[in-house]
Image 1 (cartoon, rainbow, N blue to C red):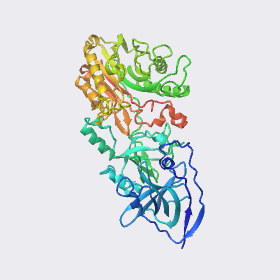
Image 2 (cartoon, rainbow, N blue to C red; image 1 turned 30 degrees about the vertical axis):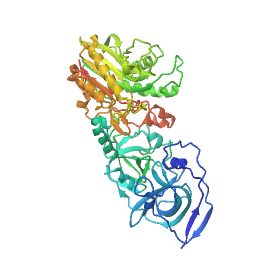
Image 3 (cartoon, rainbow, N blue to C red; image 1 turned 90 degrees about the horizontal axis):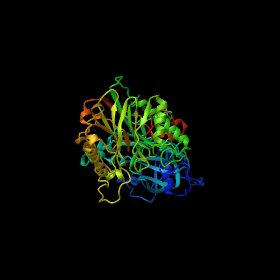
Length: 604
């Protein structure tokens, strides 16, 4: 019996290999390499691979045969050869010594699952995945049953477990928890783990404890891909397809995870070969209910993610940040107003609103008017002393219902130290609830973020690798200046009922929050919602946003909670997802921002 060899020539290019194999580095609309057609069909007597796939994989993260041409043979376990897919197929071979798998970068000739093929190609490492490309021949050697999938269970004992199974057919029999959907719209992939993952410094102290926690998290997680190239027209998760009304939320679960274990840049992923089963275990929450007791004041904090309403009376777009067009802004605004209206708060501290003053065309005026129209309530805003509040493009805002609270005197702020060039000016206002003689102070904050790190290692704001990222020193100094001001400024010091709220860009166990707690400002959400969070980054949940109360208010907080409408939702469902797929947008509160609002109901 003779076998058939398909000899072909492929223009080699590691760039296109990455594009087709993973769909993570270039747009699917980018020019594609031209692949030569089969040039000849030759009858040969038998298949005779020169090396085993296990020899190509080796025992370390990099193949010992890198850049060498080899001949291997194996059974096709999965194939995604179309150019809008991975652009290749997976082989697996079992010998007396080892079982191993390998990705083959080749769009032609077409192979089928269960084919036994011999492949001649060059060993490459593309974003840390061992594979064959520059394929010059693919020989059909018959058919075979698929190998039994290897059992993979999370967490693994060591990262080397993933590497040993790279390219192989695997199954995870456990129920996995969705932990992150940041890449769902762009690349059709999402993060899963054996449990809900939390940012280390949300749970433990910075330093050695946080480093150990981070290491443990890495052993619990994987990515699940959609086997398509970038920017897919439709995302198949959850079935039948992602939409504004069919979301995949972090905290949901997935079963029947069977497929090929592959790798991209140190991140291990499953290329599914079977239909995934999704379970809506973290449904979208309704708005927090509140008591009808008029003596209970609801205070909230909300980062509105670059609310920029267009320049001038004509509302010209694009602006420095935020929506790029008037239509995009209308969608963004619809979501933000829906969220603010449903919060049913009396006072709301805002972050990331455009810093364009307080005239009739400004963002704070626009937002207040829209909220007033949507709710029928008499919403007003606190105006800072200057026409622009700080030098940054974004600033802090404070809005309130004038039938529930009355501002007392002018607003105050701090402009020294890191507030002069790093953290945004805090907006501090004394207020009096209606029907009471008592007063309170609200301080709206937005501390320096963790991005754009200093390059000099000796800079105290450089990343100290303790889990707090960079600019921690600036955030600590901001917290100390805030405490000093709240406790020494005469009018504020005479008002013991104080609330510090906002986006502190620090997780619950990080130095700035510890400093504020030690100064007497307490996070009551830890009582009502011990595992509460407002943000998901790198598939790990934590709270960058906080609402802290002074000792006077500690026992008077009747409820405090995050409203989980944003962090658990895919970014694809935000206002700008409409441009890619109109079915991804709805004018509801879900994914109005990337931060979740926090509410506290306080007795006065």
